[in-house]
Length: 268
Figure 1: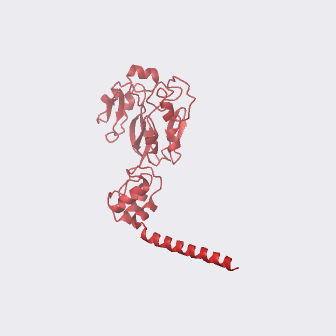
Figure 2: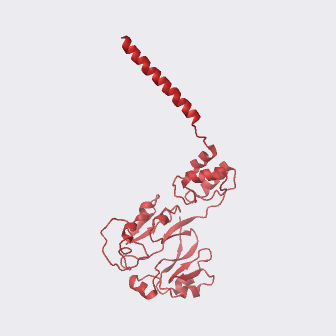
Figure 3: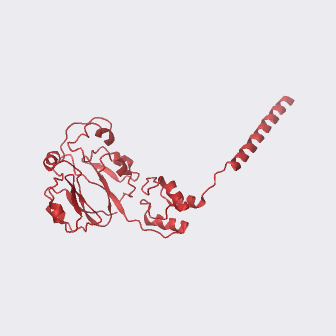
């Protein structure tokens, strides 16, 4: 009986010493908590998309708390509501988050874009691109295997007839799809404003583009000449629109012979 009590006593003493050691260690090695950063972090949506330019929501919260940035309007998914909450906690002026959404600049649908091979590999745009640029003749457009759809935390992207399409009502402008697209054909454009969008990214000469896709930009320059606001340029045989200059007049869309420029108004 005494041996049992002795064993219990020894184990109890060891447990007490270990507990005291852990208690002392927790005090000595404690990491100071930034309460302001914690409060700001609670306001953020937790997408950790990096659209703010920092390493996720924790990085943005820390930067605001430490004064590295005073811009409360960097969280696109959170919008103006989050900006106002951050401003109240940090004692800053609330910035305005310009609403925007992603748009896929490609019209290479199955019946419009020529295919050069049948791809039976891993269902990934990144992987398919390694094989001769993908299954379509145009190596610049949407490969259509859904990397962007899988990356979107808001389920705003679907693959329709071989091309990714974004639902602006569900898009939170986190830019995760932009980082994922291997061809870089997903762009951000403002909401609630009519803008001309070139739905093509082909960089081949016009005669080659026409063989690859019926709706591809041929770089004819008609849109450039029609624009009165210097908003349209042709670079690498493909038209590009500067949204900051575009007034949504639609003249470039009227003269485009292949109808690859569309006047779009995104609504959430």
